Length: 138
Image (cartoon, rainbow, N blue to C red; front, side):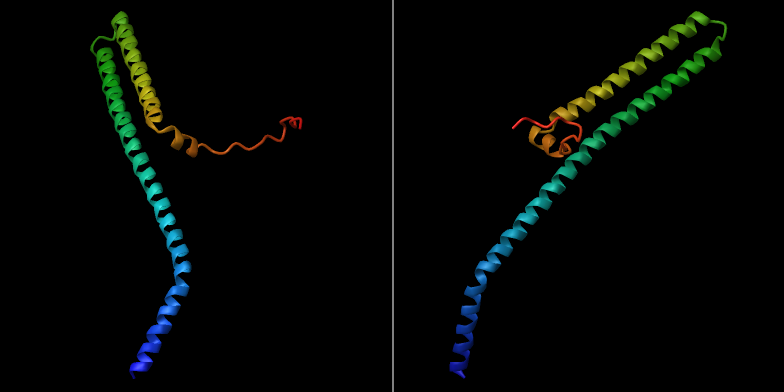
């Protein structure tokens, strides 16, 4: 019985040593796969956070615009004959709306600028050679 157990242990040891290179390659593969998925999840999380910041600001600015539109309507309703006052209020409202649009555009550019250049390049689609491009001289 002792001899059989020893032989089984010896056979197990030989099989384990013969499988180690395969397990190591498989382990490396799955480790690289896990790292790749972790990097992808991290990029998704960062994009999610960026999207949340942008959408929150967009919602806030939309609410401001709505309030200004209601105020403008109220000014017209208060005194419909005051064309000069209405025009001034309209110009103010338009100027504020343009300022909000510029601020949102600035925020978008700031978000893109904050992105590391290596990631920015990785997210751009690969350029395909044009069919109509002239052949380069060799």
